[in-house]
Image (cartoon, rainbow, N blue to C red):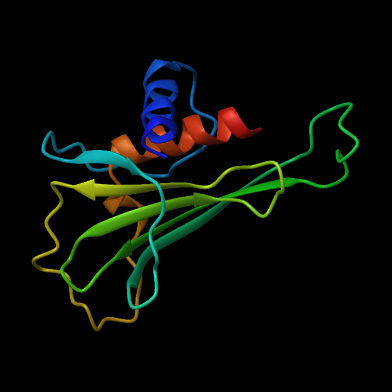
Length: 138
């Protein structure tokens, strides 16, 4: 499993392309924020901070071209304010990716608030990883 995680990190680091996901606002660019690829995390008992779904039409010539592809990102915080992200899709041929985000401060975050955070809060580095994940899986 560790070799697969390492291979995934290397693939994501080496791909340079134009973004395919449109964000309305810039993300956090704090140099302390780091994104660590992890195998999986269980979100039970965690608080969902942010979620989004990006819809793309099927590829030309694809037998599933009628079906559009939907890629999703969810960001969660555990009870100790550790932050995790998951990229996922219901498509059978798309692998999910999970990350731990370190270097973010959730000190002023109200754990009992019902509203989710807006996209300004999503780190720029995580946005880059999400974009690359979509490109790899499209």
